[in-house]
Length: 340
Image (cartoon, rainbow, N blue to C red; front, side, top):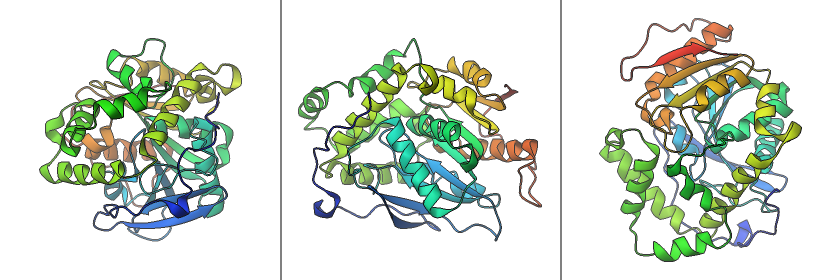
């Protein structure tokens, strides 16, 4: 069942002002007004004119900032944009309160249709991976290639460490959790998220940790923060129960675009064992497994992911003129296989 009950937060035009969103060197933010939603889009100027467009979609509780480490590494091959899904980052909640996978996919499709940038190289992490899988299945005309980093596709045996995230979908759990964690500092919250999402939390730089704390402080001031989290978690759980042509695995089988799959061996939220199933489901797939990575490989090992994407483009004939991979990077041992 989609999360379509009326939103329990004020409309966007009366939301309180909070601190500015962090913008890395070379990035810019813009606001895009679309029917029923307002999206914040983070972009970087491409290295040259004529590069194919790319769109990056973050996961549950994340934002477009999750792609700031990877985007500059691909400036020479794509013209990249990263979107804040409705209710996340700097995007206000959707007017209809729909945080389902379909609702988020609809937001991505509306943006791509309005911008006229398709077909794009489409990236998704976690929740964003499920969202862009649905986009690629229902609108193949919008997708040139698909890159999925730990996509939130249904699992029969969910990892124990992922259960608390799923529990956010249950009525009353968010209220209980916010009461129990009222005294937690932003630093404590960030350390908890980092421990859950990184294979090695020590890879987070001091500057990166400070930026994450500032962003956490900003988000906690937003009156809709937990509402967006709970409803999006409910959207994932609901999507896992759908069967037939609307099931995410069935839609994965319908994807026509060449697909790069990235899975981390220390992922506590998406099972590493799902990598081979995904490689079989997506008909034209390449699989990159990173044994030491966690749930956000594009943040933890951005150079490795960037190299894999460049090789993927060369393999599929999609690489830009004059762009070829010069060799592997050695910041993470990787296993790469071909599925499909």
